[in-house]
Amino acid sequence: MRCLKRSGSARVMARDFDRQVAERQIGATILNRCTALGTPGMERAR
Image (cartoon, rainbow, N blue to C red; front, side, top):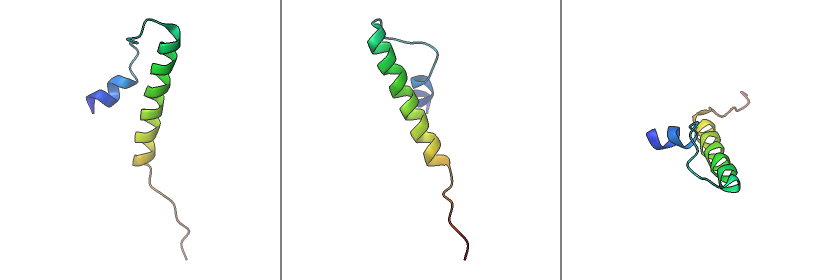
């Protein structure tokens, strides 16, 4: 879990701006995927 939290941290490891952007996008994708896994699905009651 520490790696997942770290991927969206405020510290950016890359030096090049394009790589910084890519690093942020990857972190956001991982965080969104984990959030989606924890969200319950809805089904219509019959």
